[in-house]
Image (cartoon, rainbow, N blue to C red; front, side, top):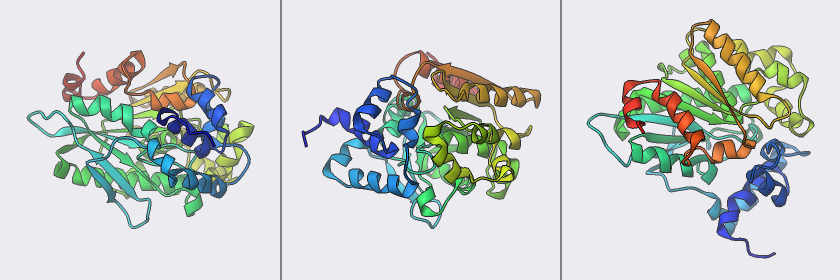
Length: 334
C-alpha cells in the first residue's frame, strides 16, 4: 500500500470511523457533499465499524490521527473503560479561575475518540491561549452495550465530575460551556434539555451549550424519515419505540431550566438538521431560554474540524460564548 502523507491520516481515519472508503471521506472533508454518510457509515453493525477503527488506530499510522497531548490524560469519571476525560490547561492565566469548555465527540453513538485531531486540535489551539480550560470526554459506545440514553447519562456524569474537580485544574465550575458534535451534539443538547437527568447526576447550571450539527434534536422526526445511510445507526442508538424516541429527544425534554443554546447546522444536509435546530430554538425562546441557530455552508465533518480556525465561523461561535458571561466576553474580545 502506498505511504500516505501525515496530513491525510485524519481523513483516512475519518473514513474508517464511518465505514467508508478513504477517497469518499476525503471529498467530504474538503466540503463536497454533506459528509453525513462518512460520519455514520453505511451497511454493517457498530461492532464491525468499531473493529475497523481499532485496526487503524492501533497501527503505526494511527498515531497521526490524534491531536495534541493532554495535560491530564484519561481521568476516570466512572468505572467503565471509556468513562474517561482529558484536560487541557489554559496557556494564558488571568487573576481568577479559567472558564471551562467541555467537548463531546461524535461518531454515530458507535465509534469515536476524545483525542482525535478533529475533536481537539483547532479548538485547543484557539481557546487555550485565550485563557480557557478545555476538557474532551469519552463515553461507552453502542458496541459496549450502551445506547443514546445511557450515553447522555455518561455525559451528565462527566460534566458533574468536571464541575466538582475544575478548581483542582484551575477551572471555574460556575463557568462551564458544553459543546458536542453530531452524536455528541445530540447528547449535550439532551443533557441541557432534560432537567431530571441533570438533577440525577448533580449537574450544576451551565453557562451555555453549542450543538455542532445534530440531526436528532427532534428524535421522532428523524426516526420517521431517516436518510438511508444513517438509519441503521439511529436504530442502534434509539431503538424502535416511539416512547423511547421521545425520552431521548432534546426537543421533547426541553423546559425553562435549560441553558442558552446555539445550534450550528450544515445547510448541505438533506435531512434538514437546520429545520430541527430552528424548531428547538423556537421552543426555547417560547420558554424564555436564549437560543439561536447558525447555518453553515460546510459539510458535517468540517463543522467540527474547522471550529477554532481563524474566520467568520469561529468568530460567530465565539460571539455566542462571549454573550454568556462578562468574563468570557473579556477573554474573547477581538
